[in-house]
Length: 503
Ligand SMILES: [Zn+2]
Image (cartoon, rainbow, N blue to C red):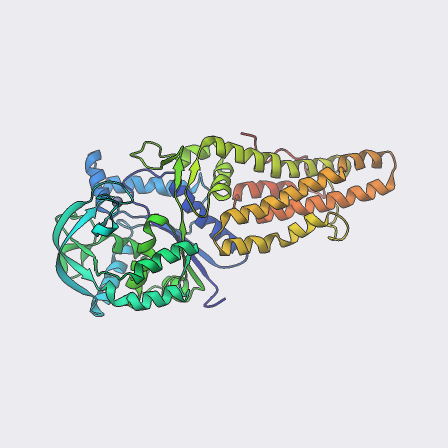
């Protein structure tokens, strides 16, 4: 580990032109797992989330709703913040880019640093602009005539803008990406970014006329007729939230000296994070992130999640209907690392019932019921791996390492799969050793059966404890309930109740 050992993690900041959907929940939960996992391993962690308030499309949406922009943005930003409780999120900070007093000075400072480097110039520009993406598209990037992300025709725009000398950083960017100094995960996304950069990088338009932006956003320092491009503004949030503009200590602790600086983003904005953001930092003379993890998209019943498509599955509603654990578990256990994943309520329910109620819940319930009934609630001391059930003991012993390895690759399915393998080994041990039969024999005075029962219950409760601990980053509430049941009061545990309800 390098630097001060700290771990800094961020989500992208979504536009607040609409309500949060399940895709936002995916990103927040993934980042939350990474943050909680590092905290569990004893690392100092700072987890940042927030909202991108300064986009032009927020202005458009506010006008359509007939609400002043500031009010509209504040109201929708609050909806994103409110996901904290239903999704059990543990972010340490939440930045709203239009309202947070830390943001504007940081954006202005970054701008001035790049200007001092001679990386800006003014140019008349003609291009096709997708307001949905808030970006210009070159003809070869379009799908036919349409934006590949939104499948609408971008609008032709001609204007005088500030340009950033992105082309100047191509060599350094290639070096940084090829050497892995900045890790882009999964590898297929890294290859995409490399191909894009190798093909040549055009200078980037980084301001808009204030009139087209309807005066919303951050003015260019020294040129108030121009508004800073919303993406430039948005990317800066990762450091402005650390007090970059005020030369604050948090920026030193969590960015400059941090062992890891990790961004979790969706595949539609890979280029902004793996190319533009890096170039901006290089120009400003600041350290780069250490990793960018790119997740895929969710669809619902086969269609892209969006408000316009009418299938924006509300994470709040799902959590209130099925519980936080069920929603988080589905997102972590089923969403593929590559390729989009289709969400249906049936899949969520099936997963919750199979893994949580019948698998994990049943293992703990049957184990603690036996401890309560036949051992007066007294949990036997843990048994060494040689005694019996070596498959389960090995699965338990290697579980933390397997989770560490999987999460180092941002592979949430592999991490939850490792947990599931312990649950399965535990239930298999119970089936083969049949502790309930051992208990009946022990009650009839069979001493060998009594000893065996102690051993089996010792191994099984040990597995329950390991699971309760290691599940913490994934299902914080479920993990707490499992741990609570395993905690003896005056030497004995209380009779167990099911930890996960059947849906
Ligand atoms: Zn678009």
